[in-house]
Length: 360
Image (cartoon, rainbow, N blue to C red):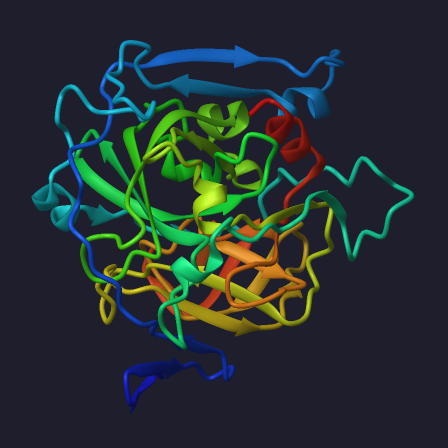
């Protein structure tokens, strides 16, 4: 059972595992214009060293691009000529369901490519970086994490949302989320019109909105809903001439970490009752290994809308840490596909994520 308590400006919901989901302080700012894209270009790229074999097949990924003809303003920002996103559409976005757990799947993650490294700590692909002007994004003593936000997109059923977070990369323009937040999986279709709102809290984003330039996920997710490859990257255009990582900071990225980690923080925008999807929550705790699976399990009572949220280890502060996994699935109530509000599941980032990261 969960109990909600009030603590002044913040509240928390504690699970039976003593994991805490905390509400964060509010920002407010109107959307500065409609953003998004409609036409899509799909490109499949194989790893440079690809050869026949299941491991290489698992590393294959495909990208989808925003329209090349997207309008730009004087600062070089991408604008939406179709005017897809409005404040009303953002408010009406239905958070995507968190997928039910599939423990016992025949497919399992590949071991880390760097076998001489510790499988517990993993291999660091990038380090966290603070924003260029950090003082501008911490106006409250208890801020929403600047690197985490709500990801809006359009599906065949209408506007929807997940959780995403920034990753430090050479171009300072990268987000990580779940594969099922960019593509239906199982031979289905791509989603479109990706729009990222960092530090989103109950309405317009104080940090502005970043429109996508391209998105990429694994072919094995797209073709067969392989949950061990339920990861995706999204590159975004600048906002007012500023790249997203320069504006809000970026988390580091780790692959090959073991499923057992301590002092982990998971962020998300849960939306099914008792949540609304409008307020970010986080859980702090330790992960455990799932028997007969490559998955990690985390005691956290989030549900739909939390998909794609970062699992952070070795945190530097409230904003920054190393992303070693993302929220993919939830433990379900027996006989249903509803989240039981007890545990989240994820396959830690594998060496295949390295291949995809290097293509962004």
